[in-house]
Picture: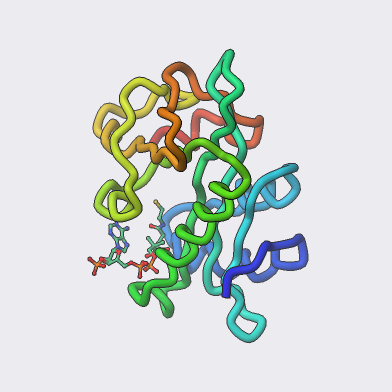
Length: 168
Ligand SMILES: CC(C)(COP(=O)(O)OP(=O)(O)OC[C@H]1O[C@@H](n2cnc3c(N)ncnc32)[C@H](O)[C@@H]1OP(=O)(O)O)[C@@H](O)C(=O)NCCC(=O)NCCS
């Protein structure tokens, strides 16, 4: 079952991320997010082993107060992939954010995966750093309530304000 993570999960995350992302080093980001205030960070714990993780970072549009969240990173251990765990983790996070009154979630990821949760391409809410052209359709949003999401420039905490996280 999904539960909120704490810093004692870091050793488990240090095993999970290189296994799920063999070509990408996300551990610095994962460490930074673990100490960033107000991040919703959920793990799937199977008898003490961390087999899945997702983080949602609070953010807003420049000059706007509508509470939003940025989804990422998301990882399921390869031994546990394609069994519904990723979907369960994302849906649990979205449900918790909806309860907190968060208006919408942004993600940079494969539309073929995130489309199943209702994410759609986002053209008028700009990511913190310009994306490579071929990633345009990977920038997506999902409104969690009735309120339409505003447009403008997304403002993220420092942990996400790194151009390398938004480029190849
Ligand atoms: C992507 C990931 C989180 C999905 O978790 P999961 O538990 O394997 O996924 P689920 O079991 O909930 O869903 C499986 C479905 O997602 C699809 N899927 C899995 N990974 C996908 C991907 N990277 N892109 C598109 N679709 C994907 C599967 O084909 C399957 O489709 P189906 O339901 O039509 O058969 C997981 O595979 C993973 O950690 N991958 C490596 C890291 C990664 O790419 N993270 C995502 C960053 S955007």
